[in-house]
Each structure stands twice: as structure tokens, then as C-alpha cells.
Image (cartoon, rainbow, N blue to C red; front, side):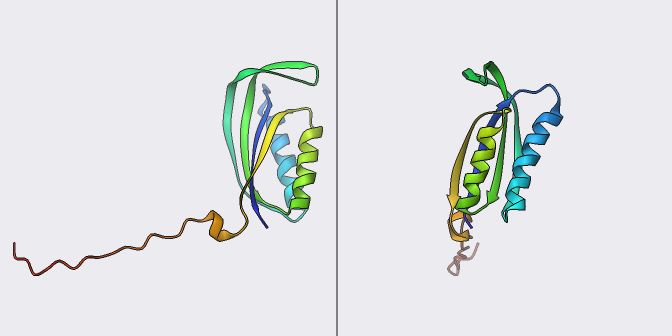
Length: 121
């Protein structure tokens, strides 16, 4: 399964429980359909670079969060559909980070030990 990253901009909520519910719902959608959530990160509350109008409301401040997860392309469509239907989500984008482990993980660098010539110090 490919590794994906979602960057989500959600409407700012005074209560953290609203954002927690959105993140939990997205993660459960992935896990209940055979995906694996690898990490969830909050970027905190930020001022938007420009005003976003969504669902008859104007937003100048939003909460940013990311989630890394493994999922099938079919599951990605259902995650996108659930984010599109949720009124708490202002914008989101999905990036495919890699198809295989070799695409994602960096290979270990080999250490080369140079034998010094017979120098006397």
C-alpha cells in the first residue's frame, strides 16, 4: 500500500475537542478500511495568508494538522469524500510519498574507514 500524507486546514475552534473529533474521524476511516495510520501532527493555530470562504462563513484563522498513513487508492477516495463533506474542513491536500519502502526510507550511508599509512606522530 502506498504511503500518503494529508495536510488539512480546518476551521479554528475554541474547544480542542472539535479538532480532535475531526482528526479521530479521519484516522478511524483509514483504520476501519484496512489502512495504517503512521503519525498525526498538529501544526497549531495560524493566521491564513488570505481569507477563506466556506459554508457561508469567512475564516481568517485556522488549525493545521497532518497525518501520514498507508492506504489503497480506493480508500483514498473515501477519505477525500469524508473530508469534502465535513463542514469543519476548509482545505486539504493529499500527497503520495511513495509506493514501496525503498521510496520512503533513505538507505543507510555506508561508513568508510580509511587506513592511515604508517605515519608516526
